[in-house]
Image (tube, rainbow, N blue to C red; front, side):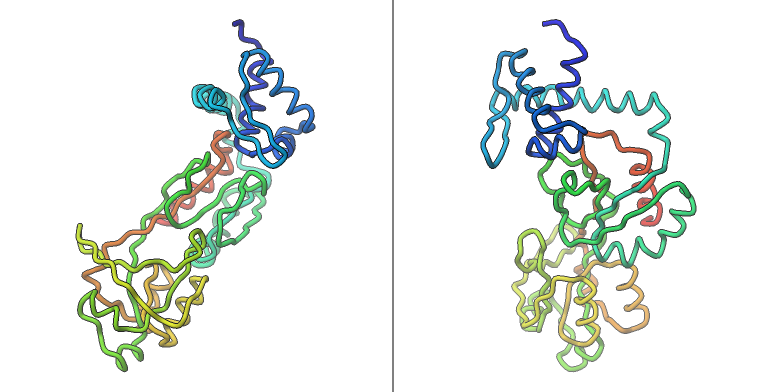
Length: 300
């Protein structure tokens, strides 16, 4: 089969449909009409002699043949985009609007205090910083890059590890004076513990204590369940109970000021990752790459 420019263009359309999940979003991303996207897919199916997509009124999914075909061509598309990006000056240009979806704790405690330096470094860049508890639909929402804590979801997004922060257990001096210091992980179960809800699973995080390769899970209890890290920190400082939280700047500052006390420091080897995400169909634009590099810079 002879290869031509139309085939390459239609491959780009297919990639947009697969990653966005429907023709409407793909058409928005490509600047085409939905009918134009549909015709491009139909032409490719006719050219290949296979059906690439299952189409229903609610969803679009790859057929078995489509999955095999897309798995083979997707890396080639990424390679072509990388080559084109390196060949031109656009990859080095840091300008335009950068839409960032950031975890609220990271945004408030780490990123916001440093943003002025980033903007001074790139004066032609405009930033829209959106704080959310969930990753959401990056492509549908027009997000360029997202920064989230936790294990990456299984998706077409590229995930770049930025940091692995320690998980520590803390309490206020007043709470410990009244209820005593737990000396082992098992003793935690008898204390009042502030629960923190995982935005992905919609249930409270499980508590674990790690020392080297040894991991001890502990079933904890407490009347307070929160969904915001700032609230968790404030409630803990106020003496509402023990809490497990990430060892970031504000927490370390509270420990240094003796507003919080770390409990069981020898059992604090658990790590929690922070990732940057961007759509896999695109080689990261200069503005995205500059932002990720800046995050790595301020986190080291």
